[in-house]
Image (cartoon, rainbow, N blue to C red):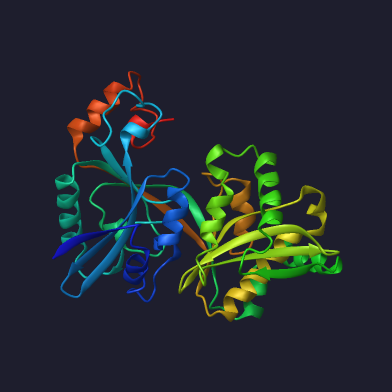
Length: 344
């Protein structure tokens, strides 16, 4: 029974370890973690757990608390670390018959490494959240489109407004363009940033060109889809995928083309592509943190595909955790953010 760790400097070994799982997910690959390292998320680590026939992996960011803006110049670097899942989904996935044994081994390892705490965004299709030894909470939902249903049945499973909008889009002679190489990245970024500006999105929802260049190195795990009107890209989406699941990741639409309903058309074309690839699920995600209008829109595509999105919070060293909270010098523990000392 053992925990071993790979660093991002060994990407080939990293991805080989991930693909030991026939149903691996895209968020565990080195390219995905490298992209977020470039965004300042921390040091990527791939945790590998083996115990007899049990095999599991976990992709995490090790973060030096001294780099947090609240502690710059106040803490010695390399003294306090915490762990976090990447943006998206994480936690242990794999073939595990004894989750309790995994948790005992993982907790012991983290204490030996001097980690203070960890924050986990659990994958939607893993049992890990049920066996997590820390606090587990769900305050939002995600929408998952089952792709194993025949397409004609799925069409009727959509809300009527989706069917109506797709038909309307076809009246405008909209076309779909699949872009597996990111050839039209410049157009994608224009639309995506335009959409984020319009929605007053937080800074964390903006990504650098280098981020996308790194994502684009993940051959066979990403693809862009663009909607064309008279040869112009008017709506766009980046889809990430592993062996079973694909994810509606980032995208946007020019506001002046809303009446053509390009987004419904885009989602329907992605669904058809995903079915042809024999993928099992299309994860549409949730809203901007709550069951808002964006969530309600996504629900129209899978009215019966609502699943809980769980997060986990665990403290390994309560003394150090409380010490850092006190260093903030303000009442932060009641705001709900975790770790509290990183409260924005």
